[in-house]
Length: 455
Image 1 (cartoon, rainbow, N blue to C red):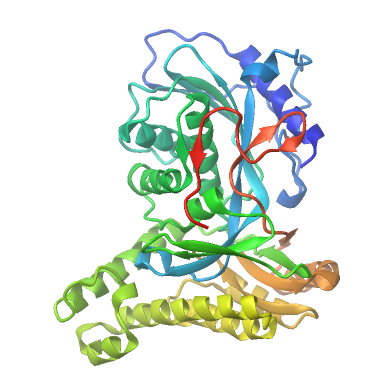
Image 2 (cartoon, rainbow, N blue to C red):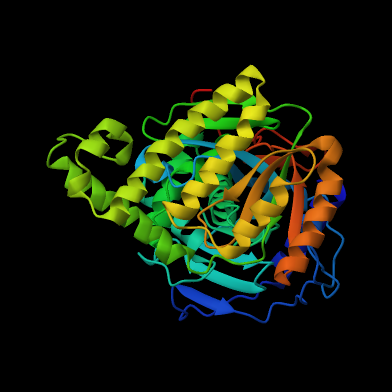
């Protein structure tokens, strides 16, 4: 991300600040204005978008040097999960990488306790009072930042009011964790602007708690964790029970190619929650004969087979996926570390098959995309990624073949489905960070203190 794009965010933020109009005190704790001057974005692939979008309708005022003294920019990445799907909320293992598509937040402190948020993507202005935040969301984009603010406050962090300009380049509904990137970028920005210490693991946990309780999506910890702990050029293996993790370098000739089927997982939230409830029901049934188990991670294959009669056929299939997927994660890490990349293909194929038949979260378009991708030159492995019911596939592709892969897969998929996909050639990216406005991306902000945990 070049400085030009960063400066465009700052200019947009500056125009945003100048455009704020004082509001009557009689307004409720959350008020909405949808007349902020922003024209619709042109249709273009998300991978080609840059923060700041199309600001032709803004009457820009060239930022004076003072703007950089109080407006700070942060970014948090989306993620792609190489293998280990629907295992995080079962206390299992996952293998994600942060990607170069991010949520960007420009923030400036206020003297009061108000949060004024503008979303470039939704062209909507939201105002809220930190002392009067609701306890539950209302099914809109602002639930994510406001839920994080509420959760941080409830955890004992005294935040300060701020104006936030939010620009997301992660495609929505694609299963690449746009929500976690929004949560983490806003949480990180709010803590820094209040000069509060940041523990990255704790920030991830609080963002997950916000999504679980305020938004109502019962996600696991993976998405927020990788957005807080990802490392450029590396993948991360996370034990979702202990939160122990380790990063390892991906082969330099390997590209992460993400194929967006353009089927939004609109059923994902309800079905995702349903899958989690099924896993919890299986644990309840097995706990009668296996005292002490808290999640499916604690059940061995022998125990599962011995007590299969206690489960319905559907619950048994869900358990089989979780158990075998945890094994595949560990085998994949071993293959990466020993350089046996050829073994990855079968593990990813088995993962996709299990998600399709045992966990039943795939769909026609995802299956077609995986089938097309798997037969291309230079492909080490392909499978669906994310919660399912649409969204994306992840493909590990030799860098020398990535462009041809992109061209051929796009053409074949559109021919077979009448949908034009978006295909992003990515590299593993860095976790949440402040942007050094004079020198690009920085490892952290110049204000505040933070800890990362183990690596």
